[in-house]
Image 1 (spheres, one colour):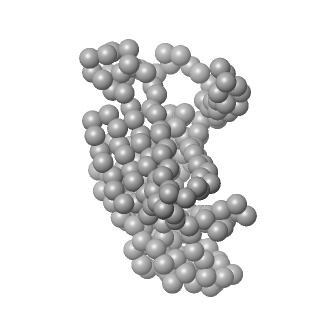
Image 2 (image 1 turned 45 degrees about the vertical axis):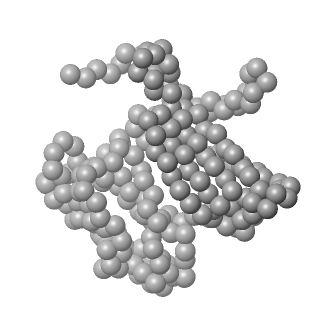
Image 3 (image 1 turned 90 degrees about the horizontal axis):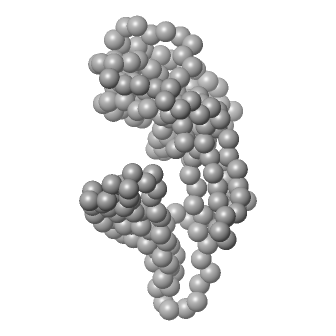
Length: 215
């Protein structure tokens, strides 16, 4: 990580002030990368706390953002405590922008989740459609070659609730953060066709083989 300000104490308190022209904002998220324990306050109200650390940026919805934010000056304050290992903190607020394609999208309702040894299955209701999403990782310990394969499978199944024909579109998004060791690494991505499939590929620009070691 590109650290610009060294932090050597066990406790750190940080305040950031910012100005808003209009406080009536929703879909606001706390963007946070921390090591270790953290407490976050927005205008004196605690909006997040957790024990432990993360190795990447996470996005936490700010509940009732319009009632917590103020027109004019706002203060985002954090207390973080190091308990072992490294020390790191970076944070801010971000807003999810609605596009023409997503502004009228309604969230699906999760009805059930079934966690099994090699797969996790979610059941949703999406308007007039029941929707099943299965995440499978074939980690069969008796098959070393299969276990070593860095692949997981996602399967989507849609069923009309009333038997009528329905048009269903599925959008699967993922982040190139999956391809990096640290968030600061440069990533390149490309799209191509292979064996009748449309393939998206992403990876770090630098590929230093055997450049890391652990004891």
